[in-house]
Image (cartoon, rainbow, N blue to C red; front, side, top):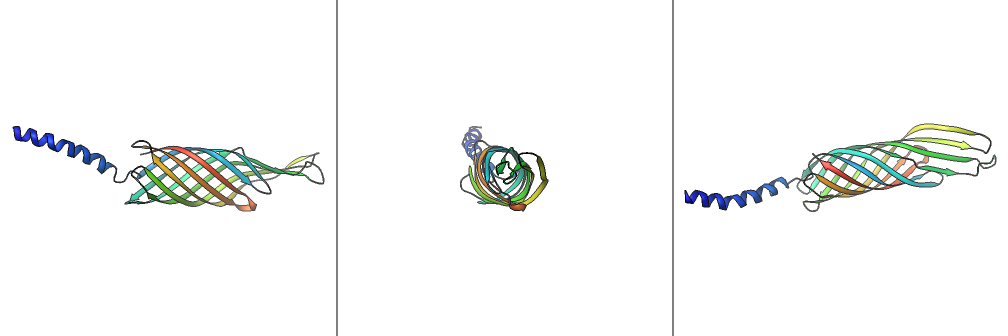
Amino acid sequence: MRLRTSTFILALPLALGAAPAFAQQAPFTGARVEGLIGWDRLQNNGHSDDIVYGVQGGYDVQMGPALVGIEGGIDDSNNKSCFGARTAADPRVCAKAARDLYIGARVGKVLTPRALIYAKAGYTNARVKETLNDGDTQATLFHTDLDGVRLGAGAEYAVGPNSYLKAEYRYSNYERGFSRNQLVAGFGFRF
């Protein structure tokens, strides 16, 4: 009886120590969802800075230090870019951003059991409304969805077993000469 108790007492710390190590072999694997907020610069014949906010989700698979994943998200912004003076000779043209849909993939490298860096690329579709004001009348030139490509890079840091913080830079290039640069921060959960 004494031998069994001693064996159990000696084996217990080893088992408890192995369980967290086993659980952390792939801490970045699984489904995830996150909220994002940050800086948004919309560019088209000038630029405007505002706040972007949204949600994103995805699924990642960690294979050793490498990571691959798919993701999608929806952002919104009240960003508005204008140029011109509201005169007949120099009408004011404004482009207002609305929702932005994204679907893409990411690849990354796990630096530590809590830290990950990654790059991303995918398809993005932004809703934009462009108006013209010549001082006498205001007219909508177009209200459309613009297709584009998004590239980005970022880092994640696990703050708990299922939660993380992230920082990310994103560049999107759309039709009709529109582009945007964004710096976002986020908080997410992995399932």
